[in-house]
Amino acid sequence: MTQDSNKPTNDSLPNAEASRRGFLKTGVTASALAATLPISRSAWAQGSDTIRLGLIGCGGRGTGAAGQALDTNSESNRVKLTAVADPFKFRADNALKELKNKHKDNVDAKAFIGVDGYKEVLASDVDMVILTSPPGFRPLHFEAAVKAGKHVFMEKPVATDAPGVRRVLEANKIAKDRKLAVAVGLQRHHQSDYKSTIKMLKEGAIGDIILTRAYWNGDGVWTRNRQANQTELEYQLNNWYYFNWLSGDHICEQHIHNLDVINWLMDGPPAEAQGQGGRQVRTGEENGQIYDHHFVEFTYPNGTKLLSQCRHIPGCWNSVSEFAHGTNGWADISGGKIYNKKNEVVWKSPAGENGWAQEHVDLFAQIRKGEIPNEGDYGATSTMTSIMGRMATYTGKLLKWDQCLNSQVGLANFDAIDSFDDEAPIKPDEKGRYWIPTPGQDTDLVV
Image (cartoon, rainbow, N blue to C red):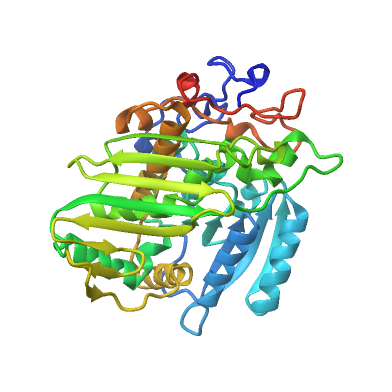
């Protein structure tokens, strides 16, 4: 379902590496940029009373993440929210109302409204920022937070295109040099059931792993209809899930969790991928560009296969889970169970914590102890794995890891977007429909 009149060309396709203030525009390396950064107040001095938080992106996940961070507050771990930012005033107001209701003594925050409101949060005296704006902005916001000398918790995915992933990797080098903590919202790494199951599998509990499976199949998520007097950019930002430049498609926005678990098990990303997908049910104008189903076969460097499914279609088989099959048995990773060849349970993990809460508990505990956790690299790698899967389904081609990671196709010039009046990276055609990649035809616009 491609609208040729609205189809981008190689000349017109927005490219993050051509941005007017883009990090990679001039080939700046991490060490070169680090040398230009201003000397700022330490993100948090060990022994201080309170860690001051800033929230950038006040939607449901941002409000939830800020609440989970504030839940860690205690006499020995004082946490206070002092600044928030969001393009939409109603969203910032709703977040502050909810957070004040639950944490009235720990929320005294100024709200900065606008697409560029994040700059004001970073210019304030916050020690740590929670980055939960639509994922396309994550590389820009992460780089800016590192430059400002702030500790970072950022939600997944950390980018929506390969230039953005590279930007995050470069900025993360600086974060390490400057001893800034970086956490990524891939919370399964903080759940004891997942950790113990992965440990058992790596120690050979099912022998050599020959096949893995991962699923995020469900009914789908919200849509937000166009409102009167909205600019095109304002509409897309409000309905961000359905635009690739903002969400990366649901294979990136949700299925990344399952792909990350298999990367964790395999000690790194896949070497190649091929797949298929499309829009079978979710085809309305309000559904923007994204597919409603993806199926990808990933191959890891040692030859192990991952069969990956994600689907947003009501009335179908639903599952959010991961599995591994080996020479001596198999494992339900998400269920924390290991089976022998007779399909008998031979091991079960202890019950796991709430990962969304535990990731904040772990982060603040490490910072308080003077440790500097950094999850930026594997967050970027798992993000790139999901982008690689999208590239495979959009093109119908067999793709290699380096080919995808080094792609020059950027989905938007994020640095140039400062207000609702700016031009949207993609526009509807005369019928109100958006360009959708067609496998076998649009490879040079996708990879």
